[in-house]
Length: 617
Image (tube, rainbow, N blue to C red; front, side):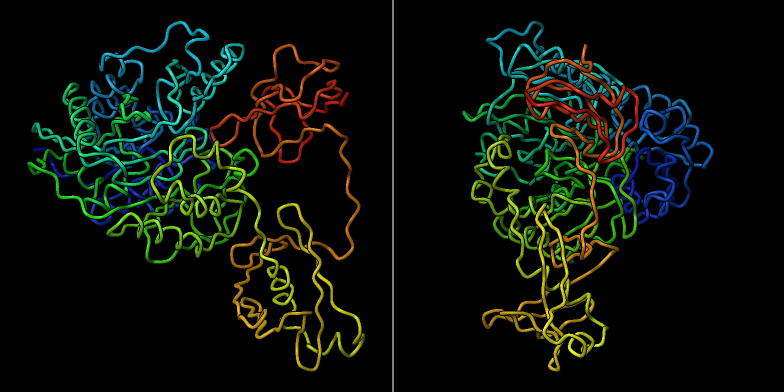
């Protein structure tokens, strides 16, 4: 039996660190955070009992520097290190460094990490081998990073001609995200389901298999919606997955929490993907179904306590949605800016690393929060989660909130017939703008609150007040009048008009509109509007074929041999931007001649910066 843990440093940031700190506080354990310069005022650094600065802003300068984190733990007087579930959580050398410093390592033995953290070695351990030579007959294939996860360093390749470029891009992305550029190639299973098993193993030989999770709804190979248990699996399939997961854990003398992942093909065959030697982002759905705190169990295992012989029984169904600061309608582009307000109904669980007024920066993953619902049945959990997201207050950068609501209510999801190709098939319809036609009027009436209701009537009774707004690329012009009876608008009865609440009666039906304003940004219920000047200012016109930066980031690569005067085809990759740990390919919008190239590798760019111009032919 190890000594009780009194103080834990979490070697991670954001939501991950905040979630672990919550359990530590409940157990009376002191908490220590590490933070980069970019995260100096981040929530995880503010809520910890102590925080240690890691000089720099990028992951490679800070959160991937194991030696700095061990030094921070010693300096802060921590007696244990929890690696979180990213960055260094699957780094055996880091685990050894923690142990060598005389600290408790809250994770599996370094030897188990070494055996399973590299996907190539894990496959070999399970009797599988990556593809050595790729031929036309092998297509499509999947390029994957050997270390880490979360979709970084992962590419689907359907043409041999682009394999080398995709390998290079995957290596660069993996190196940036995990400090390890090793990648490998394996067959890609079309229309499969991503199913995983949560395991927990103590130091006394007991291994739990805590049910299954389905994580099939993914974008860029990164999970968006997860649930437990995985629906539609037979008892035989579930038992097979449990046995494979326990076998993998016992093969490496595993200890602590881990996840064994599979791809279940349409014919029901399970293909081993990898074993993640850490908690997963989606672990709350397992916690909800089994009524456990997996972080607390990790801590107790690290203290040498045994697990019960059998895990607790499963109850009900749980679903988790990841709320990202990104624009799904425009190639999932990450978004930055101030998160003015984030609130969800009390009926669901919210795990987040942000609070009102925090800034969303460019250096890290764009996930804002996880929203989790638990209910007796899957249908009830779906309804509870979709309703909570629909009624959530999310004011700030563009998010995937509307996509989440529509995904949860899509027939393929409600009938549990989804697979990993869900967004490939349905993204256009799921991101189709559906503006509320009365939102601009509500915004204008709220803005008019507090002014003398007779100003307009007294001076120009026949002239309406005019306000202009923009949303989803469309401009709206709103007209209303001040009269002796109050504010009026054609065809709509104004029941109430305050700065934060407008009530309108349309065709005999009253509707409420909650309104919030931050500068020129106006939020009416779930509709985001930009207030426009009454008389538009002159704007600079860009030449046809201009490419502008969709986000702040760094130019990491320009296509080989690309120079002004070159002929390019529509869709040809011209350069790559890196932002929020992902590389984003910028392609030629039209076929033509490259007439301008404004950037070079290593250059920092801001949103809207001109990158290149392709003169159409």
